[in-house]
Length: 573
Image (cartoon, rainbow, N blue to C red; front, top):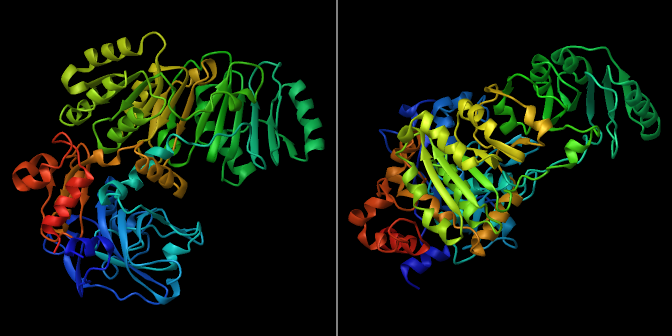
């Protein structure tokens, strides 16, 4: 067996020491020591642990949030980082190199996995690269906190031929995948708390499944009140007739501050009521706007909570109150529809574009936009792929066109009907506000950008009721999302490796993180932890730095498994 084959198998020599990048507190000065990694012992696994080798680690803007916040980060509150530093890296592909005796029947040296980083133990977040030592270390010892946590094992097996980078990228790709499988309810939340507010009109009906545990009825029409009274006795929910309270007061009085699972507004709401009601939702709550008239004004909506808390805005112009839940439940792209991706020039934006191109039922038009010109070139490289599939693809930047021509061009592309899907990856409330008027009838507005909770954007929600539009969002991913990505990669339905823009060994990880913070890369920077000395190297520079690796790229632009093998054969000891 050659040295490289032994390395791939996990049976190669294990050193006594390793390189790691600890973060001792907030700020770049606390990353590593003297702008570099430190040397630390390779741990000996306990009987209930595995020793794993980190093979590829993607760098993410979430890592930058940790560096900026330090111990004030929501996942790290209370941690003394000076004594117990964080080792980041949550986008990880790894190999088992030692197995503790308690796991001998379940794991073997050479087993390879991707990591679902969003780990919970007894309901507490213990995420990989946050509470658990992450992939900016060469080795790590993991036990039941990963292998037997709340959802079982958070390691997903990968196949022998898989690339390290393409599977290390499973985690960010799973977040993208999750944005298209957002679950939808077909009615109010079973066992939940509903607030129904009658504003005007008297011909509304509740026709369908309706099984909350509690209904707060404020000024509802007489006919609906009779229906609710009859249903409360037959279906067993509590009915509370209540005079109108401001939404914040109603939220506190009737939910203890936790928020309503559903708020149904019947008729034409005042903007202040609509804005307040939106902020009175519980996690995964629905605002159902039942109105035959335009709202008539924009309202400031918390777009951060659409993303992080799963708020949904739905509506109908008809009389059936529950129709808004049942119609337009899709989160997947409309086949042969028009797609607009805002912020397409960044790593995650590119993933959304690539996924649209790889989807079995593709859009007919993809409009990829970016605020500035310097990162849109990589997306434009995908135009030839789009043409092969008969997809029209247009890339635009405001910097190049200027605001007036930019929006004129968007209006031409949207046509009279608008865009069927708008995916917002740009972390800008202004971008959200500007995009809303372009949404088509039955359109889906998907807020993917991780704007902080409390970030508001002025939005006219009229089309939610009048044109059956839908506002959705998601954050993170589940094990099932990661498995779906791995299945697609294995079956060649998805090319995650095309997201790679730069590579490094441990020496270049710090520069890679700074590059992410400064938006230097249109794609992902991948660290190969087992390579000690390789500095940060964009793929375009491999032609001079590592010509033998460059020769294995696809079209001189895209990372390949063959390039990875050549890299590791060249530099892994």
